[in-house]
Length: 77
Image (cartoon, rainbow, N blue to C red; front, side):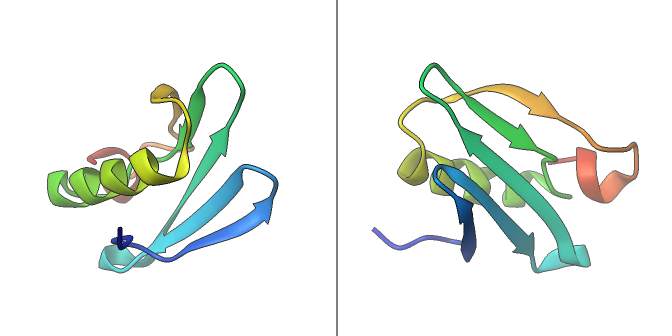
């Protein structure tokens, strides 16, 4: 299964990715009981591709989202 985005491993079960549109960095922390997504990107299409990647990377679905700030490129996905 190919990934839509290039995810960098920061440590065990912790990843970050720079999305091409607007060059936004998002994060993913995969825990034993759930998954935390840091920022959601800019568009619904990005959200779809991020979700597909998360399904491949994480053992659990996203159950928490942290939006670092209110700019459109971090929250509209």
